[in-house]
Length: 115
Image 1 (spheres, rainbow, N blue to C red):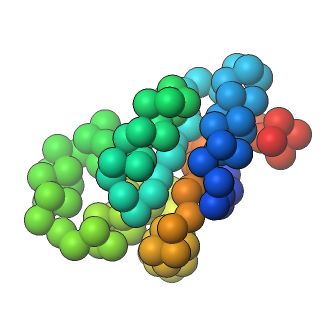
Image 2: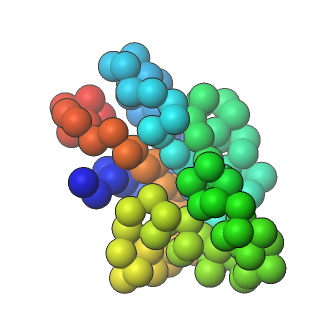
Image 3: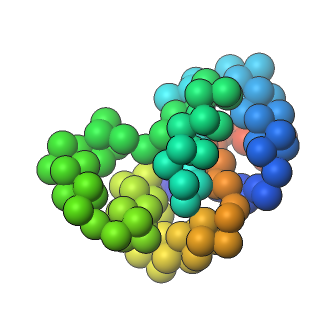
């Protein structure tokens, strides 16, 4: 099943929605935040107990490879690792270029009724 994804422009709204998910029992290992800026991603994830796409999701080989990729390539790879097609990953990476925050939830059961 495809992950749920929602785009945000406001960090506070993202935090509120992550809290709602947590309050409804969605495990933080199934909640991912992604931005085009690593520092912003880490800060948001740290403030919300959400996850970032890391070695667990990508594997060691791809994690090392991503260190040498351009940022856009790295983000598209991570999106594909979460279950998005190449064209979907391209579309979402463009949204990240625009400064958006992506909330990605891999446990999609009843997600629409939570946030």
